[in-house]
Image (cartoon, rainbow over all chains, first blue to last red; front, side):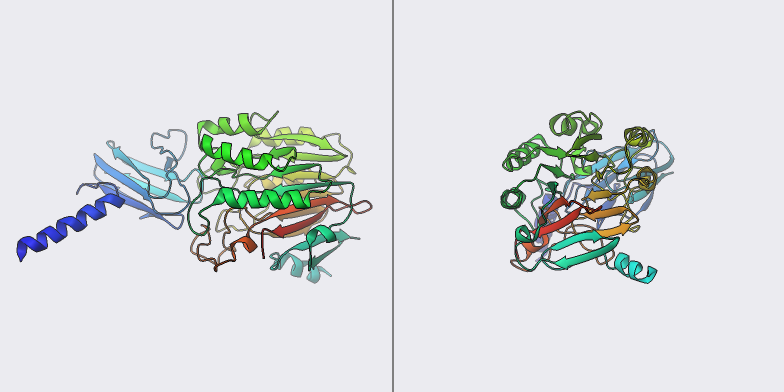
Length: 109
Length: 305
């Protein structure tokens, strides 16, 4: 029975992999649903890759506040994802440049 | 007296198939259009058509065929246009600023046979700071804002969809405001003014960011004019209000409806449209200047019942 269950589990993971970006155990994920970054604040150790995925029917962006804008995605259509590796500690505030009421923060320790 | 006005401002959403909206002697009146809007539309010195939010490239519930509904909108324009002198498109021509989406929209809209004046929506300026949109759709407005005169009416197209600030609304910016102030300086206060821009210049919803940060500044420049009409899109539904000599109106989309402010979890598309009802929630707008009346008449017509 056990090998059969493992096979079933493996195949369901493959199905998952088809619709979401490949996430490794150390990645942090932020989803975009209903014009909201969720969670709106993530705290991660330096070197972490943060992955954003847009689940809305409307395109969104991930753009750092202010003029520095190191963190800047292309427009993300439905199902698109964007990832960024945060190597330096600090607080990164970002927003959706198309819908500026949408805001989030990444704290890198 | 003020009570009536407040009542009107509160009741900004009209249901039904079409509204003929005029101001006579300072008293706003609205009347649902029973039959054909064409027949009810008043004769005037100048009329023009507004279409908005065609979102070519959007292919999701409730509309898998946005080119198809844009074509239907243009068919309706052709039935309604009569002596219309021009058409304005108040932005979100495309969904993702892709050249193929611009191509499709341009080809369909050309079918109206009207001179079309565009302003950008936030979905049109996603690439290269909006340059591809400006080069293709806006003559004489390299930054997306411009003005022109037609039959005595002064038209001003504004761009309030770029350089948006975190936590903010739509944005015009200092440079555009200075241009606007100069553009209006020295004009006779009796000249009718039509301002069109994508995001409403007045705050429709704080919560959903449906407004323009520096919209009040722009509107302060037109206070001295006797007839000001502000036409917007962006919110995919009809909203209107009157403040002094200024009439505000938002048009329906030709692609998909959005919820009334605060009635849904987000301003995203209304997906659960009852079967056969989508076309009642999409439409076009015809605006007519009527001789002897200070305000323009605005008539909205849906694509279908």
